[in-house]
Image (tube, rainbow, N blue to C red; front, side):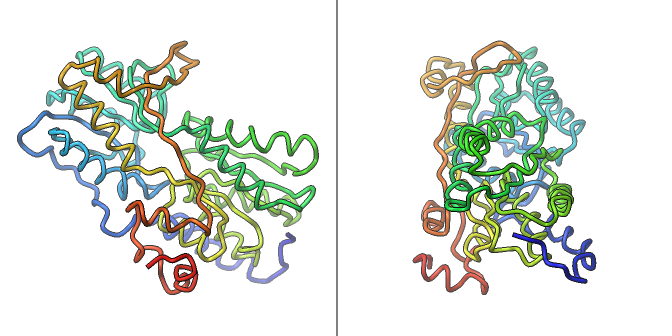
Length: 373
C-alpha cells in the first residue's frame, strides 16, 4: 500500500502518537487498580512482583486480579505489587517481600538481569522463586510458568502469512518486543519459523525488523512511521509483537489512510486489540488465557510453600532451555490460541474480557455478526 500525500501527514502527529501510547493500551474495565498495600492477614504469605503498566493492559487488568483470586483459592495470601517499569523499584519490592518472610516469590521481571539478581537474593534466603511469564536467563529460579512462547510467535507468523496469501512479494515491517525480554526472542524465533522461508523464496519481502526497548508503544509507533516513510510509504503487512505496539502502528496507518488495508498482528487479546480486530484495523491477536497461567502458578506456589517439591515437579511437567545458564528449567507451558474476527467470541466465552468492553458503537455490527452479546 502507498502512503497518501496529505497535508494532514504532519499535523496531529503528537496527538496520534499520544493516543497510541495511551488510548490503545487501556486496561479492561473492572480490572484491579494498582495497589501498594500489604497482603491480607492470615494464610501463607507469597510475594508477587509484576513488571509495569505502560506496554500492556494485561498486567494490572488481567494478571493481578486473576493471580490474587487463584492464590486465595490455594489458601495463600499474595502481596501483589507492580514495579512500574523501574528496575530499582523491582529490587526494592523484592527486598521488602523477602524481609517480610514470604514463603515463595513469584516474579515477572522487567529484564532478565534484574530478575536473575532478585532470584539469587531470594535463593540465598531459602525462598523458592517462580519465574512468571518471562524466564530470567542465567538465573536460579527452579520453576517457570508461561505459555509456549515460540508457538505464540508461530501463530503471529501464520496469521500474517494467511492475511497476505495471494500477494506475491508483499512488503512486511516487523516491530518486535524488548531485546532484554527473553519472551520477545522466543516470539521472534517462532515468527521466523513461518516467515523466514517466505522471505527466502520471495513470497514476502522483509523491509526491516526492529526491536523496541521496554516494549514502549510510543517509540514503537514512531519507529514504524520512520520505517514506513523511509520505504516510500509502502507496506503490505505489519508483524507487531503485541496489541499495544499494534495499536500504535494502527494509529500511524490511520493517519495515512492505510488502516484496514494493511493487516497487523498482535498478542494478548486486550479489549483494544479485540476492538481493532472487530473494526478491521487489526488482523489477529494471540489469546493467552491468563486465568490458566495464574491458576498454574498458584498451584505451584502452594506446593513450594509446603516444601512439597514432589508435587511441584508433578505440576511442572515441561522443561525450558536457559542457554545463558546452561540449564533446563522445570516449566508449565500453556497453549496459546490464534484469534481473528471469526473467533473473537472465544475470548469473551472464556471470561477474559466482557462483551461490553469490546462491543462499542464502532463494533456493534461486528459483534452481532460474531454472535457476541
